[in-house]
Image (cartoon, rainbow, N blue to C red; front, side, top):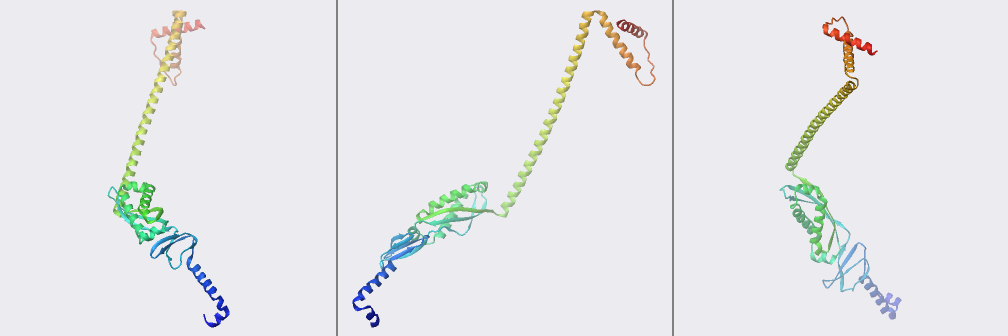
Length: 296
């Protein structure tokens, strides 16, 4: 300070002013305000001293220093693409994306240099290993299970780095053109097979229905014949009963009635008819007429 400043402050107050300035400097250097989204790694003489959380924190000036400011926000690795071979020897290209956040900065800072590269390499190896255990159809149909397995494996692998894997996604599974063509041919063949099976089942069902219809018709015809036979048997029974009750005269009466009905039927035809009747028939008709007259 120049003489004018010293004069204004006063020689007796100078130590107090210097002490206040030193105190302000200590506060400025020793107080650290950590944002909510970060953690500070503090070193003392080059060694880890502590990790400061969000809020106001105090450190020892000149002894401690903030060596690393680590963001604890969730991060997303760039979309990675790696080749893998399935258990049935199909080459696939898998696109993956991983989300993670740092939970223990002291481990991340002192145990790994490039976190993103290390996680990406770990994910690539795990993806190849897991897909190698599955057939192509399983990779396509069980993607959610595959994602869960990959996430659990990555979490175990990066646990020593103070990292939490929040999400792991398989964005796409691509096939080479030759494999796609082969799969398309297989799909078309499967569709044709199903169509043939459907047509065969339709033809079989039609034959079964026709057979059922013929069986039904035969059953109905048999029922009709049975009913007709029952009717004829009933009529015969009635005639037999009449004969038993009324004797021969009732039978003769029935015969005469049938003969007259037959004669009426012959005479009712259209056009001119010449009917030749034997003499015995004429006598029978005469008897029938007499019997009918007698009944009347």
